[in-house]
Length: 266
Image 1 (cartoon, rainbow, N blue to C red):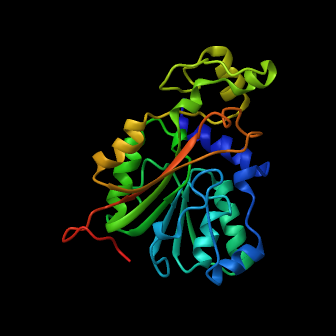
Image 2: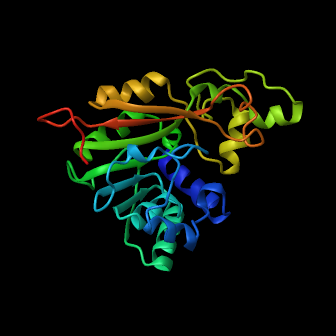
Image 3: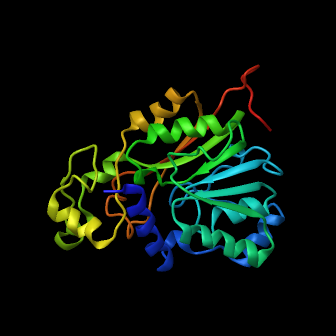
């Protein structure tokens, strides 16, 4: 199965349906960002601390699997030079919709987040990578490519799922009223049994993969980054049945060390 192509089709479908992560920001949101009043998310709800971005004006920013007409238009309005890279052309069209509507400049590139070969070494000051690497089987490739295309001192802001959130069949839990462990980790709905595979992938849902904390955090360290910030986040209780019991997502600020010193770009 071609995972990249399947997930592109699945996310195009999701985007056309106007899902939560495919609803473009408003004209007012863009106007506020132009005045320096803005906030965006890597995870479901918590606003990323402003200090994680450093000075954003005129910085080269890569939105990695972050299209959908939300974060990239805000960063462009805040003064960044934005490139939006995403597997879904429909998601990219949402970024262009806002750019055309509000007079923003956003370059868009369609492709696989694990292959950034179209970009030069050291091309970007900052990468904004919200929860999305659950759609690729090997995230170490993602971390290595991010490290390569960042300038020394560049920042990688990433959101990702707690792997424990993949232990449960949430559709079954909604019917039974109980959360019970259904799957082993590492998880993929390719390998979760033929019945479940048909109920998810067979109905056009994306192929997903859990990733260990060792590969999520340790993988960034192995790629050469330092971890300079961390937080956890929650969905709403209505969106995630596990939510009352634990945080289900997290975010990291990683920095590519400078060659000469340990400070970061401003």
